[in-house]
Length: 610
Image 1 (cartoon, rainbow, N blue to C red):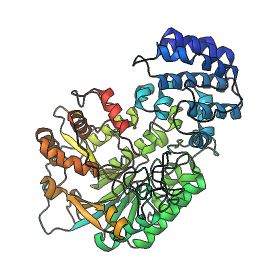
Image 2 (cartoon, one colour; image 1 turned 135 degrees about the vertical axis):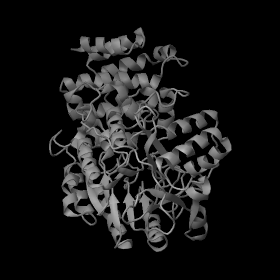
Image 3 (spheres, rainbow, N blue to C red; image 1 turned 90 degrees about the vertical axis):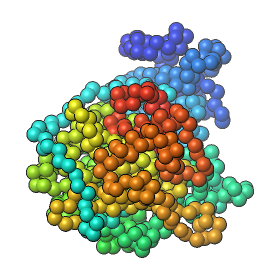
Image 4 (cartoon, rainbow, N blue to C red; image 1 turned 90 degrees about the horizontal axis):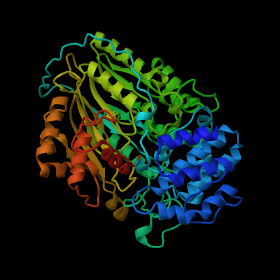
C-alpha cells in the first residue's frame, strides 16, 4: 500500500529525488509525528523515530530548497498530509493523529502552539472522518492551512451539471421608473463578527489571529478602543453592533433588512456549537428589539458553524457530525421573521424562499455548499442538499407567475473560494433567468465591490451582478459599514430593481476619543458614479469607465477598501481589481486574459479577510 502511495505521489508531484526518499522513509518507519523546520517554541515531547530522522536531515533539506526552487513550508505540508493519510488508513489511534497534526501545525509555523492545539481539536472528527473515506489531495489541505502558494482545489472535482429548462424568454428593455413612484429602503448588514470577549484596553497586537481580548496593552496605541479598534486584527464589541442597529432603526427606517451572514467572532480555534448558537440567538434577539416591525431576511455565513466552514450536506455523515444542530437552531431563530412554509428547507440544509409581496420573492442560499474550505465537499460536492436544482424550480415557478426574485447569500459565487462546479452551474442559472432575478446580494470579503455576470449567448451581454457588501466588523483595519439600497417599490408594474445605494461608515476615531457615535455617509452611487439606476447595463458602463479612467478608478478604490491608512493601488493591483469586477464565475481563465488565473488566485487569497 505504501509503495503504491509513494508511486502516486511521485507521478503527481515531481519534487525532486531527495524529498521522495524522505517521504518513502516516513512511510517505512510508520511515523506518528512530523516536522520539517525547527519549532519556534518548546517542542512537543515523545517524537517518533521518523521525526528524529527528519531533524537530522534539516541541513540537507535546507540546502536543497534554498532560493525559490521549492516552497519549503508547502512541500513539508504536502509530505505530512501524505504520511497522515497512511496513518489514517492503517487505523492509527485518533489521539496519535491529533498529536501529529498539532505538532505539524506548530513546526510549519501555521499558528502558535496554543492556537494549533485548539484548532486541531476543532477539526479532529471532521478531518479524520473525511480522510478515512478517501485519499485527500495534499495540495488542497495545504491550500486550506497555509495559502494559495500551496495549491488550488478547483480542478480536483469532476464537473457536474444540473437540469435547466429551455425556452428562455426574449430579453426586454428596462425602463427606469419615473420620479415619485413608491420605493423600498433596504439595509444590507453583513459580516458583523461580534466579539463577546472584546475587552476595552485589551492588547491589540497579541500575536494570534484575533486580538483585543485578553490582557492590557502597555501603551495607549496598543490598547483596544471602547467602540472598536482599527489598525488591528480585532472584531467589534457588542455595543458597536447595538449602536448600528440603533442608527438603522432611528435614521434609516428600512422597509426590510437583508442579513448576509457571519455573526460570530474570528476566534475559530476556540469555538463550540453552544457558543455559536449563543452568538446567533443574541444578535437576532437584539435585531428583533431594535427593529420589531421590520422584515428581516437572513442568510448563513461560513463562520456560523463550528468548526468554521464545516457544512456537511444532508445525509452525508452521521447525525452526530451533521449540521442539524445549526440548521434546526437557525430554523427556530429565523421563525421570528419567516413564515412556516419557508422553514422546512432551513432545517434541512440552511436555505429558503419566501414571498415578500405579491410580485416579489426572496431566495436565501447556503453558499457554504460551494465553499472550497468545507472539507465535507470532498466526499460529495454534486449539488449539495439539492439546492441549485431547487433554485431552478423556484425560478421557473416565479417566471411563470410573473414574480421577480432577489437572491441572498454569503460567499460571492465568482470568488476563488467558491468551487468551480457550483459557480459555473449558478452562472448558467442566472443567465437563463436573467429576466426574473432583479438583484443578488453577498458578503464574505468584508470589502465594498460587485462582480458582473454575462450571458453565454453570442453577444455576451451582462445578465446580472452580485453586490458584495462591506462589513460591520473592523477585521482587519476596516471601518464598520452599513449598506442602504433604494429599490423600485411595491406597485403594479414595478421593476423591483435597485435604483441606488448608499454606504455609511462609523467614525471609530471620534467614537473612541470623544465617545460620540457618528455614522457618516461615505458615498452614494448617484453622486459618486453618476449612475441613474443599478441595472446590469448601467453597471457594465461603470466597469468600462473604470477601465478607461485611472483617476476615477482611484476614487472607487478608496470606497472599495474604505480604509483609514491611505492604501494605493499600483498597476498590478489595478489590473487585478478590474478583473475582479468581471469575475462572476470562479476559476474562469477566459475572463481576464491580461492577468493569469494563477496570479489572480494568489491575490484573491492574499486579500481574504473573511
